[in-house]
Image (cartoon, rainbow, N blue to C red; front, side, top):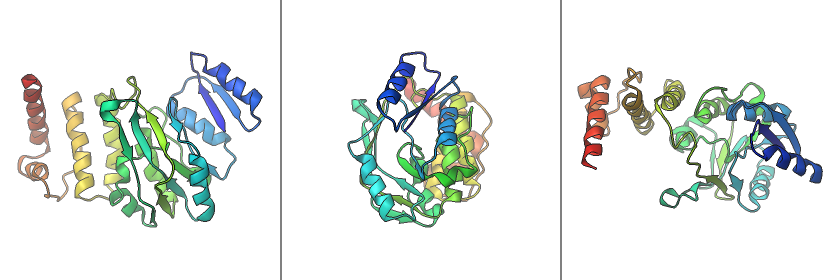
Length: 264
């Protein structure tokens, strides 16, 4: 286990050092604060095992989760990435949600991204990665929603991705977190990451997902829309996109949301 103390201003450094004293399989790296991506990258640089997984601050794993998922990896050494369930927003009662998976294997990364809707759960923290995948890949420092940038790059290096119903990652709700307080800049990063993938693979559902992010970016920042218009017509919103154009659809969406807020 590698503990990366990313310049924590509280007592985390002392706690990390105490763990190192008591467990010879734990290492700690103390560094100046550089953000989540930088902390992960430092951990990757120092990792020596065949596989890597990440546990973010405040989060934790269910009992025996690593034992269960690594047993599957031992049985299936061809797996490059193994994804397991997440208990999202744990402790936020009104928004708790368990993201569960079937036992599934993907040898077509497009199928994993689109059919498996991997774009909805790009988290780095609920996956076991073969360390070799990171030979040329790192998390983008200074970018928000860094997982969305990184997972597609790892999929280009992977040959087999699997999902399992075993194990559980507890993603604890943080009221100060990025996803809770995402502003126009943060969502612009998210949109940029998805647009890079959208240029390579898409279907109607994924395109609708990215379009919704574009609408939110416009509403929060007023920045000119950049999403390309693709030939999908399966929903009312997609039909309106082709009738009104992206700029008018963005303006209409903003007006409707404003009216809804006034009614409340």
